[in-house]
Length: 192
Image 1 (cartoon, rainbow, N blue to C red):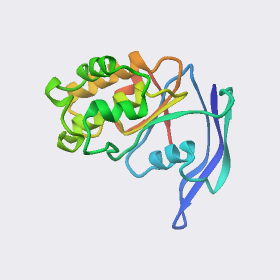
Image 2 (tube, rainbow, N blue to C red):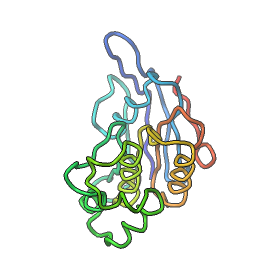
Image 3 (cartoon, one colour):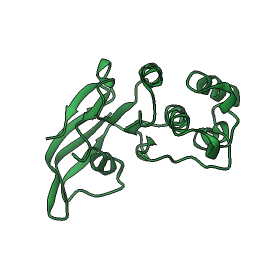
Image 4 (tube, rainbow, N blue to C red):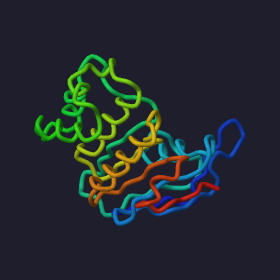
């Protein structure tokens, strides 16, 4: 499976946010898009997801099953349903996964006391880890995470990094980050 970006350019308010960027992502090489804030990492991820269109260039998907590709994203801002707990938030995206397995996965990243709290009562860092578990457990061909370590301390960053490394399997994995922690198992790509 491959995602082929060819000469992607995106312009906002007369400024090139991304200019003639080409790269091929595949399921053999997890990738982290690097660079400081404001360089266009989120814009590039949104283009890959099809949420925005480039001003020029193309995005091609090769080798995916008929019917198209399935994404499991972690967005830059929290996207949990506040009135239900972490388990139910994950079950909505991954209905085939048993509640026991969801609880086991969550227990590896969040305190057990938080598993059945309503999402609106979770700290930002805990909510972020729930979103990461949801993305990993969701049936998908592409796992894409925009700044997955937002709100996490160093200990939790390392736990999440290990969790992602051991769980992403043979899917395409793309993350954006200004931190240097994913390079232990990801190819780093700098936006120009």
